[in-house]
Image (cartoon, rainbow over all chains, first blue to last red; front, side, top):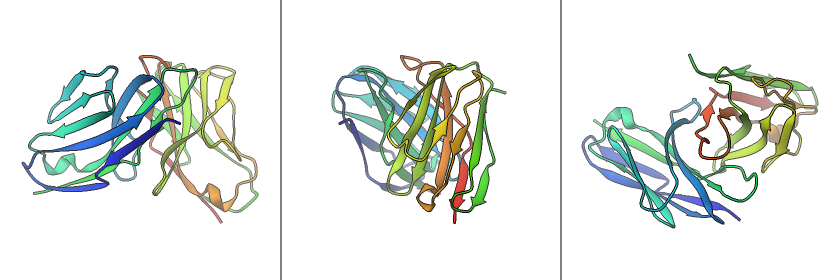
Length: 111
Length: 114
């Protein structure tokens, strides 16, 4: 069974204090790993897709990396507006498998 | 503006009263999907549709129906809602399931079943 585990569940950072969020996954052949940002009361907003180990993608203060077992979302010098829940999801290659989401990491950045 | 819209945004109903939550996208996306989000359980897929007239069950389809008669619309139907269907529902769409599975989510529908 495909599984996604995100850690930590919650993270509190001071503005400018860089850190990383972890997404560990087990999947029978990875088609893609996805990162989303979700603000309270809103739908998830797509951030990145990673397809193969070693791949990296960046967007502003965010950088996502992928290995064969996990993905990291690095946040460099975060700002209060980066506060949100970050969701990781995987999709397996086989058949019409749905996205499997982790439970998310709730990030708070304090000014 | 490219978007996924859902209606209603908030709904309080009673057990057994049939309801429909509408979902529409204006991006000509092939793939559409419904999720529910519950505290401690994360996002779980209810149903999805690869194209018009093609739908399939996700992880938690019990108690739900869908239809895809037009490419842009994918309504979620609860024939006889029960309190355990109280949840936050999201519709999503994407170009396809392959390397284009960057899903765009709607704003959500918060449903309460009394």
